Length: 148
Image 1 (tube, rainbow, N blue to C red):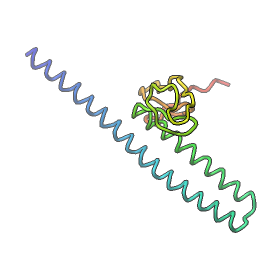
Image 2: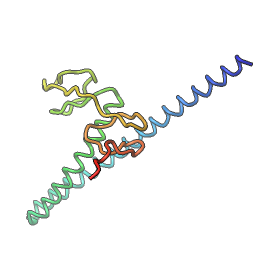
Image 3: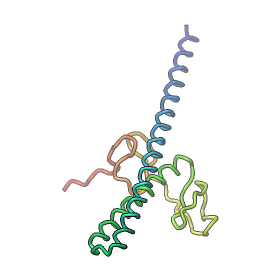
Image 4: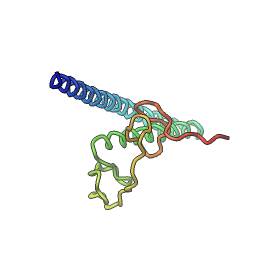
C-alpha cells in the first residue's frame, strides 16, 4: 500500500502543478487581450486628438485627450512589463526593446538596464511591476497603508 500512497501523492502534486501552470497561462492570455484592447483605445485617442487639433478645438479639450493618451500608454507599459517578466525578459527603459532578463545594457541603444529586483506579491508570489499598488493576479494590496 505504501507504493500506492506514493503514486497518489505524486499524482496529486503533478495535478496541482499542471493546474497552477494552466492558471498562469490563462492570466497571461487575459493580459494579452487587455493589451490589445488598450492599443486599440490608444489609436482611437490619437485619432480623436488629431480631429480636435484639425477642428481647432479649445486647449482644455485637447489637454483632456492628451491626459487619456498618457494614462493608456502607462497601462500598456505596465502590462508589457508583466508580460516581459513572464517571458524572462526585460524592457529597455529608453527604446522599449525586449532584452534578456540578465542584460546589463540594451544592445540597441546602450542604455543601462536597471537591476533592482521586481516586487513580489506577498500572498500568491506573482512578480509585479515596479509601482503596482495591487497584485494583477489575486488583487492583494502590495504595500500596507500606514495607519494615520
